[in-house]
Length: 189
Image (cartoon, rainbow, N blue to C red; front, top):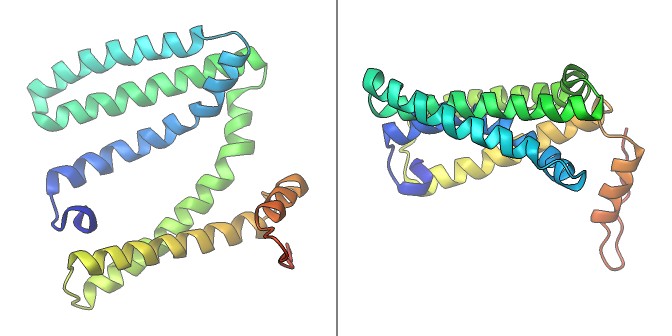
């Protein structure tokens, strides 16, 4: 927020901290939504969307009365997370591929790698904040860039080192890095 707007806006920071986890869960529905539409099952997305709308409205009204502005955010958190999980459950039931197996085989390792990279970045940012740097907008933009580079390096190392990426994925990556007359020698470990 400080890099973007030039100042630390506490309410905006609170909103991002609350909504980021539910949007991560919601991202898991993106491929399933496209696949469900391709399978002729738009009702999965429609049911989850109607559930989300109804629950978000009801929870937001109730939580605004109790917590004020942050109640809207909490209502959105609950509605978006629950509707995303329900969509995933309906979709995986249709595929006859248990949601628990999907989480274990597809989601768990990248989530763990992301958490490790995030902890390293958190530690880096904590050290920087202890050094007395003046957090100007330019400094925060630079720190954001460094954080992004660290995340990519740590996450990339982990997915290759712990063999999350299979041979097909490696060949796609090699094709992506193919430039006119230059092809890198990639040692996948």
